Image (tube, rainbow, N blue to C red; front, side, top):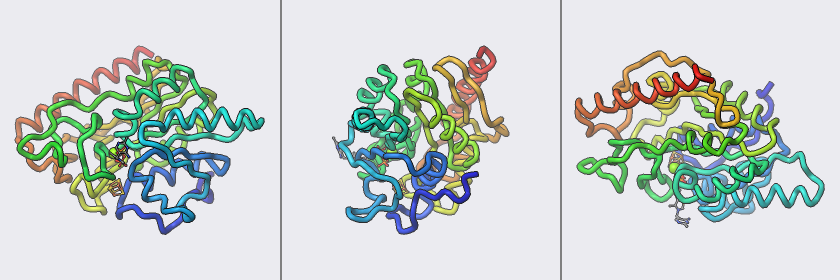
Length: 289
Ligand SMILES: Cc1ncc(C[n+]2csc(CCOP(=O)(O)OP(=O)(O)O)c2C)c(N)n1
Ligand code: SF4
Ligand SMILES: [Mg+2]
């Protein structure tokens, strides 16, 4: 059903193997042409191309870093004044723009339950400005601001739980390694009124010090190691796990990426224990739903 619907052209400016470009392709296949995208500062501000060129078929609204959600709310309201209640307004924001600097705007839109679809493509750092750590960067990771002799010592913020706590109608995690699952979730979000939050695992070969050819393998392993489980939450309360992980040891995921190459065996074990604990908590919520 999605095969023929392409919303992104060849000739974009991303690095080879960039997950953020694949994520956009899958999202636009499901959203269709009657969509307006709001892009705050991020890699996507660049890789869409300079005006008057665009790698994307639908209209783009470039906006300030912290204003992804509030700009999307404004565009939706303006369309409503013109009598257009059907166009999908989607904020397309990085993890820095979501977990950190745009969190207040996002929380405001979610609390009002504004009718927007908010995508966070998560590459786990501020990539566009040179791989600085964000609150989406996992514990133990190398970035340029958390060097190998002083890696990140805080855990990744649980953004999905923060959004679920707003009791918005739909929250989901997606991965570029599972396109059918992703497009089904985006189609579902499109049909729901109110605030929808889609969290996309988006490999960045450049910032993760990994070969471009391994991007999808890494994303698949993130799901099968339970680093990034695929699940959805209705009304902030009802959890549904969509892909059963194959219980691959996290070490297999970590060793493909130079950003983790400094980790000791004990640190890898600590990461494994944390993943197992978080997975138990998720399963518990899904069983209780
Ligand atoms: C208020 C403000 N602070 C800082 C910047 C510089 N800046 C532009 S893009 C960016 C990184 C964005 O990171 P993220 O949201 O994770 O997207 P990514 O680049 O990883 O795709 C930063 C820090 C800015 N444009 N505006
Ligand atoms: S730095 Fe990373 S997220 Fe940015 S365009 Fe390159 S691969 Fe994509
Ligand atoms: Mg980022």
